[in-house]
Length: 347
Image 1: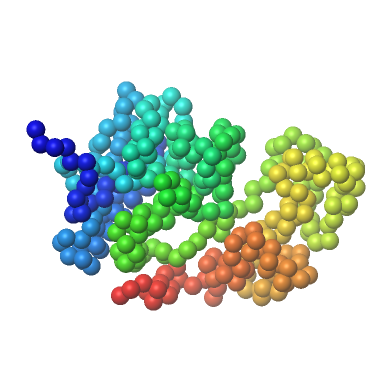
Image 2: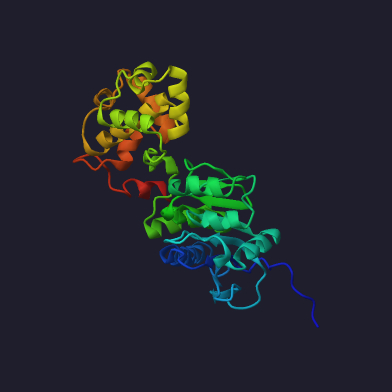
């Protein structure tokens, strides 16, 4: 018997596995597959026939709970996975007994040196494996409270679109699979191939964060009718000039009691809550009007434009002007999605 090969040769493609579990988002599964194949085409175009490639494999959960490889773009001996992707879920969460041996499979691959990657609802499967314990991960903000309640030892930062801890990479919303895919192409095939792949697929590879896209979705089902009454009042009127004392008086509570109950019910202190209401209004104005930044600040409830800019950047991670350039849908506002991209990518 010949000696077992335990280390891939330099010419062997880096194998990235994609987990296919029930109700996994098929567009992401096939999107990753297509992106890595496009990256291979770009790698060969740049480096010739001997250029490094990505080998793509699908690992599907079977009815008996086992996990089997169901697709392999380079059939033959496998030298192990460099990365394993847990894609988003379309509906049912990938948790509990219905996941069979998948959590153990993920742990096994991680222990063997595989980088584990999750996107959106795939974070549940990462948490089910136990690998997210003590870590900070990202996911879509709609999953934040559910994951925090179910896995108390997992920290969540939904402002980030990607969190790369080397051996574990997590991506935020459902379409963040695109950002994760480009990151993996960059890691295993190099930046030039990643940029060429982005250009070929008409994807903006520019840095962005999930906070750019997050919406203020206040908690209204907390059960505190007094605080809910104040929330309804704040949502229906301008918050300009509203103070803690005014809200507490309207609620019929002392300042400290009101502050404690408001924080417990909404997750924000009253000042932060009002700021987020104002910023939500200003985002709509930036997207749909051609008002100046100063006019937007004023109509959103800010007398000081500089203070408005600072709060806007703190909450969203970019300036009001940068936000308008990205997201404006008013006439003469938004640039085409790929405008200027050609100049940022190598010819």
